[in-house]
Length: 291
Ligand SMILES: Nc1ncnc2c1ncn2[C@@H]1O[C@H](COP(=O)(O)OP(=O)(O)OP(=O)(O)O)[C@@H](O)[C@H]1O
Ligand SMILES: [Mg+2]
Image (spheres, rainbow, N blue to C red):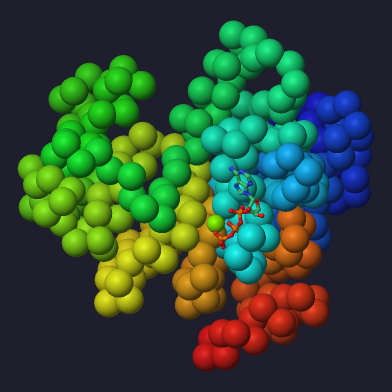
């Protein structure tokens, strides 16, 4: 993280860039739930997003530390995907700051993007790998070529090195034998595991998952969750939008409940899921009675 940033470990709001204030929730402050002295790997500060007059994100801040698994819950349309997409500027926030590892981008959608800002956004994207609901594999490329495409063409990694890395991640997701297969000949669960291996091959600092199991046949959900749980347990930093309460319960360090573009409750899963303090969280969770 760069110095002169946004808030002290006390959690008290401090003035940061311009008038953007990075507020920390008590559950994000090192010393209690977070290891004392931990340094964030990702900070989102006061993210706002308008689509026309629709105010979709109303000042969302989040602090994530290396090795943490974060889950974001909330009902449909509350802004979860938009927030995730803002983190790597797939959507440009209307206002706010995103910092990942050593990169910081201050959103300024009205200004033309300078070369330096474009480079910062490119670097931010390299630090945040995204796994989508719909896999987004290239249908005309084999599994292994899907995996090495971006490392070779975006990161300029030598083909042999990218291939070796890709194979190690295919091994990890249990699909090395599908190395030369085409996506159309894989099951949905296998495609999603390939998509996870593809994201890993870019060696991002943070993995972003947007409902990675919701397009799957229920019988295939388990194999994908198993891979994600093993990544969480081996210390990958992950932010996961999901409706899978069992994953949130087993793997999350913190749960963020979003309602109408705001994080209205933040805490460890055993509190947010079992003893929600906010009425909106309670109402949402009442739909998942068997957690
Ligand atoms: N590209 C876009 N253009 C205009 N409006 C958008 C766009 N993307 C999202 N929205 C609007 O922003 C709001 C939040 O959408 P978002 O997709 O972030 O919700 P979500 O919490 O991910 O919902 P779901 O659980 O259904 O995926 C919705 O009102 C949606 O219609
Ligand atoms: Mg969504």
